[in-house]
Image 1 (cartoon, rainbow, N blue to C red):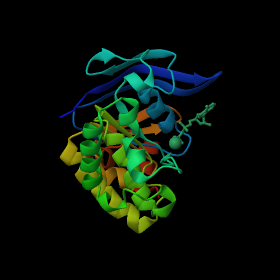
Image 2 (spheres, rainbow, N blue to C red):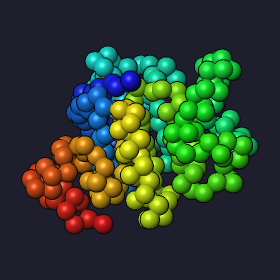
Image 3 (cartoon, helix red, strand yellow):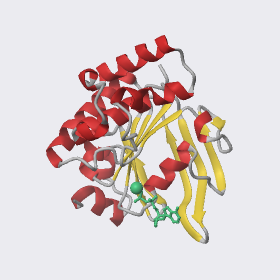
Amino acid sequence: MNQASLECRHISLSYGTTPVLRDIDLRIEPGEFFALLGPSGSGKSTLLRLIAGFNQHQSGELLVDGQDISGVPPHLRNIGMVFQNYALWPHMTVWDNVAFGLVERRESRDAMRRKVGAVLDLVGLAQYARRRPAQLSGGQQQRVALARTIVIEPRLLLLDEPLSNLDKQLRVQMREELKNLQRKLGLTTVFVTHDQEEAMTTADRMAVLDKGILQQVGTAAGLYDYPHNRFVAGFVGTAN
Ligand code: ADP
Ligand code: MG
């Protein structure tokens, strides 16, 4: 089982002269389902992209299993990321979308068939393998995006608002599915959301981000009962 720890040490990032992440200090344990919670524009996606290697921080260290991966390009990090808009290939079938990362890694036909079959089973999409993304519902597209990411057996799973395109009822169902799948895989997972209820009901622990500053890290109960400041109290308690 792939279970990595993740540590951000004093990470800062600016776009030009605008600071977007300020001195982020955070440790996520192996196998944890960790939510990164904050309002729009607080820097959640920037931090996630930085962990995946698509953004570079100007200072600080980014450690996976104790090793600094700051200079390592995204495709060598073995970190899986599901983007907010899923970013599926519209012209490819479900099967080809899921197999894509394995083709890039030059896996054998047999291994590919076995792995793609297994993850499609896992997310309940085996019978949709020949369809194209446009022929699927939002929830099914979301499952394809997830399948495509876990098929490469990443050591970390990053999810950027994976449920935000779905309607409320499906969102509640999918968050249960996601949590069950995460438990089954045991993958260390960072789940970004602006929805405090989503974070509170799914995550082992969470971090609240505002204006690029980590306001508090803890369990749902810890944040709810002992908020460190007004922002956390408002956001975790009564927001939404
Ligand atoms: P969130 O995901 O929490 O909504 P983001 O990480 O997307 O927030 O954005 C944080 C801040 O950084 C915002 O003020 C946004 O406008 C700014 N930002 C994001 N990406 C870029 C970029 N490529 N260039 C300049 N500013 C950016
Ligand atoms: Mg975002």
